[in-house]
Amino acid sequence: MRCSRLIPAGLFYLPLSFAHFAAKQMEARAAKTGKPAVLTEFAVYNLERNNHFDCSKAKNELGFAPRPYKETLHDLAVWLKQEGKIA
Image (cartoon, rainbow, N blue to C red; front, top):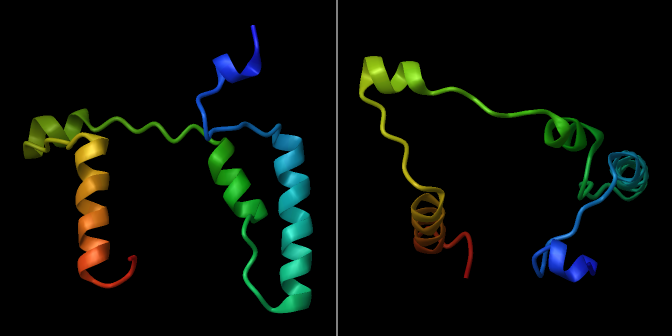
């Protein structure tokens, strides 16, 4: 099976070792240029962690009702446009 069938268009995956290497290189360049790094070691650390959280207690005790990601991201984009943060 070809990779194009396994990975949706626009998405790609990097081995963590390469991501750590790239982050170090970007941080070194950022230190020299004074511009922010696109990728940092801290960002890679956070991306490689399991960030799954259980919200059942908030649902049961507070009536929390999470919204679908699609709806939330749409509302975020609308708000960012209204605030002039994106075109």
